[in-house]
Image 1 (cartoon, chains in turn brown, red, yellow, blue):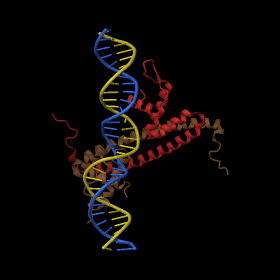
Image 2 (cartoon, chains in turn green, brown, blue, orange; image 1 turned 60 degrees about the horizontal axis):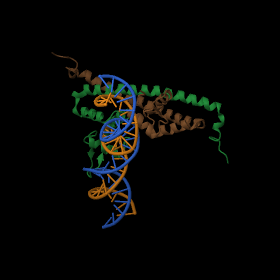
Image 3 (cartoon, helix red, strand yellow; image 1 turned 90 degrees about the vertical axis):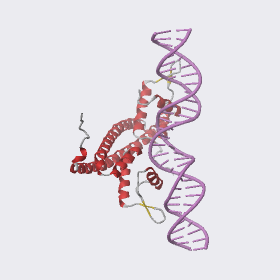
Image 4 (cartoon, each protein chain N blue to C red; image 1 turned 120 degrees about the vertical axis):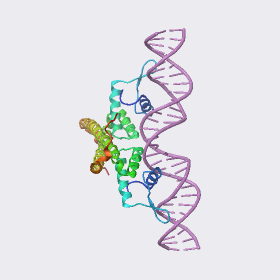
Length: 123
Length: 123
DNA sequence: CTGCGACCTGGAGTGCGCTCCAGGTCAAGG
DNA sequence: CCTTGACCTGGAGCGCACTCCAGGTCGCAG
């Protein structure tokens, strides 16, 4: 499994993110290694927050052949920068969360009675 | 402005993320510095991907007073770990994107004719 | 030969987090 | 005094990315 549910795979095929998925004699999908690799790429883009519409554009460029390499570079490059920003934002906000946690832990330290019974099992 | 739209603020008040927002004589909301600080915290949680239901739980704990500090610590701590995982996942997938970019750039280098006209303006 | 379960299809439904709308109120500027 | 525009309310609508459903078709185990 590629990490996508079967429903998601069907959906992706329907909207055109997956093209030319082979079928066996009884009409069932057979995913090749290439398909799997492509799904890995889709997973990567999806997990980094690329919207489906943009993934669609990317897959059309990919299908269109070598003349689209520049465009693909531009697309991935700008996505890469977005991912970078996203990571920075997360790191920044994580700092706030951790400071808040530190603050709460100080409070908890001065009111230790609050902790009673949380981790002590009694018969 | 807190970074939220006015509609979002109304929505947050409606579902209970904001409580006791003051009103002036004509019924309009007046946000205090405390409100602003709380909104900052909400923004932080939201931007790091906490679902609204959990933010709601957090704000209820906060309203409930000092006996809930332990629970708040647990909530924020587990969120902090999720954020950490999220950052790691992003970094990992960003690596794949960058390798892909490197691969495309190599191709582009060997087929430089493709680049013609992209950045050159002609009268 | 008969179930059974895993797949197939087109299309409807869901959950989340807003965002917009109609209709109304108020305060200040011209 | 009247208009304008920014806010108010309850409630409907939207966009995204799936997820589920009804009804059907295989192919293999018993």
